[in-house]
Length: 141
Ligand SMILES: CC(C)(COP(=O)(O)OP(=O)(O)OC[C@H]1O[C@@H](n2cnc3c(N)ncnc32)[C@H](O)[C@@H]1OP(=O)(O)O)[C@@H](O)C(=O)NCCC(=O)NCCS
Image (cartoon, rainbow, N blue to C red; front, top):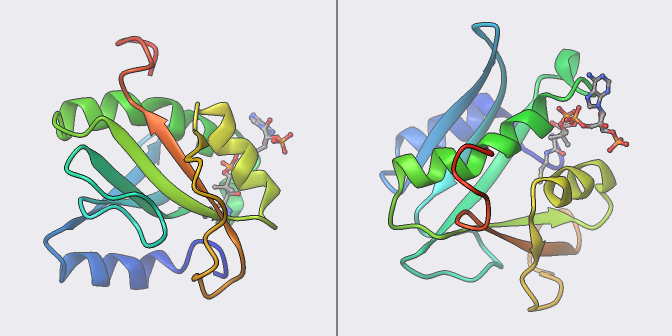
């Protein structure tokens, strides 16, 4: 709840907001996770017409630690290239005291945006990370 919010609430907010879309993560046809893509980027991260923000990532508690998040983030570049072909970068902020999430994003190829920590979040300092969706070869994602 602290790091990713509650999908039921994020989803309702996303439904009211044309800039955001909710994405369900499926494993064997069952929903095991959730995130949103925001065409305005996310608070604290760079914003531009070729940047899309990732927010509210949450894997179902019962499915955590089983590689679901890793698999979902590995598929993210291909998903963004197909669905948002004008977006080159995915931007996000992640709390500095959430090492599992930071490790997950690093494995997926996210790197520091180079603008320092974002201190405006409600849950403490956040790293600002970016992913170049063209840096992954088509087919790898
Ligand atoms: C952080 C979060 C998104 C990670 O997703 P996840 O699906 O649990 O992550 P993964 O299972 O892919 O990877 C986590 C660990 O499980 C390990 N793992 C991968 N496949 C595995 C498997 N089949 N079985 C057991 N462990 C596995 C990974 O190696 C990784 O290990 P590490 O701790 O050494 O890094 C998830 O835990 C979550 O929803 N947390 C709460 C909300 C949150 O923090 N969101 C991020 C907001 S920025």
